[in-house]
Image (cartoon, rainbow, N blue to C red; front, side, top):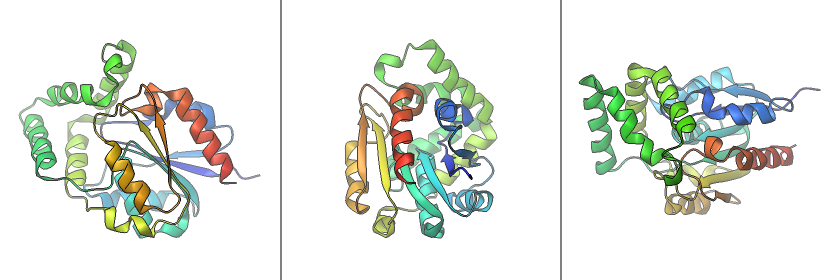
Length: 234
C-alpha cells in the first residue's frame, strides 16, 4: 500500500532539523518530503520548485516562511494539495517597519556580521523560558550556520518581495489546520484570526508555553496534532 506523501515547507534559517521530531514520529506511516527553500529568490519560484519535486497529491505542512510558500502553492496548484497545516505563519506581506528591519539584517550580513543577525533573532524565536535552553539554542544556531549567509540573503529577498496572501485566502478549499505557540514572538493572534476568517472551515490549535518553533519547543504536542490531523485526511 502506498503511503500518503507529506511535504514539509520550512522557515527562514531553518533546515530539516526543525522537523526532526516529526520525521521520527511520522515516517513509518507517511512518505515525508522536505521542500527546498534555499535556491530561489522569490516565493513564487520556491513554490514552483516544491510542486515540481512533489508527487501529484500531497498534504502540505508549512512553518513560518514555509507558510508564504504554501499560500503560493495554493494559488498555483490547489488541486494537488489534500490538506494544509500552517504553523506559526501569517498572510499579509511586509509593512514598512518589517521591510526596514529586514534591510537592516541584509546590511549586517553584507558587513560580515551574520552571527549578530542570528543572535538578534533568537529571543523572538523561542518562549522566554527557553532562552537559556542550551540544547535548543545550539540547534537554532546550527541550523542558521548550515543555512549560511548567501542562502539567508536569498530567503530575505524572497520574503520581502512576497505578495499579500489575504485576498486569496477565500479560494483555499482544502481542510486547513493552524498551529501557533501562544508566546510566538513573530506572529500574533490577530494574524491567526485573519486566516481563520479567510479559509472556510479552518481551525486553530494554540500550543501553550511555546514560541515560534512548536516543532522543537513542543514536539510531543505538535506530533500528536499532526498525527491526528493526517489520519483524519485518509
